Amino acid sequence: MSSPLTDLFPHPIVQAPMAGGPSVPGLAAAVSEAGGLGFLAAGHKTADGMRQEINQLRGLTGRAFGVNVFMPQPESAESGAVGLYAQQLAGEAEWYGTGLGDPESGRDDGYDAKLAVLLDDPVPVVSFHFGVPGPEVVDALHRAGTFVLATATTVEEALAVERAGADAVIAQGVEAGGHQGTHRDLPENDKAGIGVLSLVAQIREAVDLPVVAAGGIMHGGQIAAVLAAGASAAQLGTAFLATPESGASPVHKQALTDPLFPHTELTRAFTGRPARGLVNRFLREHGPYAPAAYPEVHHLTAPLRRAAARAGDAQGMALWAGQGHRMARALPAGRLMEVLMTEYDAARAGLTARPAAGGGAR
Image 1 (cartoon, rainbow, N blue to C red):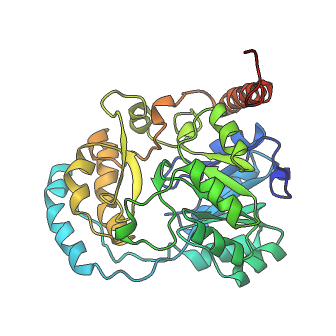
Image 2: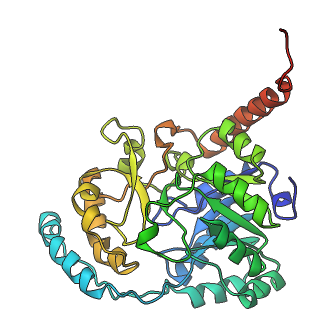
């Protein structure tokens, strides 16, 4: 299902922008060079840090790439709950020999400054997470020659993406690793996530936009499945975590296939927003008590997560991963792209070779 956006990259594979370190320029360049759409994650970076990574990426590839931006978050009504959570985490701080972070370190993630950079020095694609900007921002990016995408986890959110004038919607199923890109963080919806295949089908019926499917996709056969469901491309994050080019820590990469971490859960333990990660000690002990307060909890736990990473302690880290994490392959990103496309082509050939329903010998 070709569109001006998907014409930018020959293979229907988008590398998910994974904030916190994995989506480095080397990974994005390798994916783009192999025919996919590589992405940088601007989340949790300064505008200048984002600019530097864009310049590094341009030095590695002349092909199209994208940059992901977090939308500013509304004020939280959970200040008291954040204080109680800080008290609960005091033992963690003592264990790791560090202090807790300041929960009031900022809510907008440098949004305006990042937009200014992206308008002053445009990139081919910009995507938004945790919401969608207004039509005036989308129009400004369009005038700069940039394609605009935004994540949706429901049909209602996809309709908001369409009203804003975006070029495509990223349909993020509940299987996806990392943060769910819900536009409004409502605790009552924590158990209401929709699987990617159902979500793609629903969004395709509701909006007239290309759909990029995201959520637990690790194999070329799954790419074929979401395209058969109506998507124009598939977005893969966890599949690229274990590659040598990924900026994820060695501990994180090893944990993806470690029998000690057999499954994932959505949790607020590390950031205050639902995010899917490997179940470890920190998630089990603190997840049930973490308040719905992002980015306050993210700032609060940041020193703990950094200290755990320095110590190589997987039980204290945010090990973001999708439900398909056990299928991770530690291949170079370019080689992984080749394998995914071989699997995709084989799956498509199998689908077209099947007899029509009711046919065959009797």
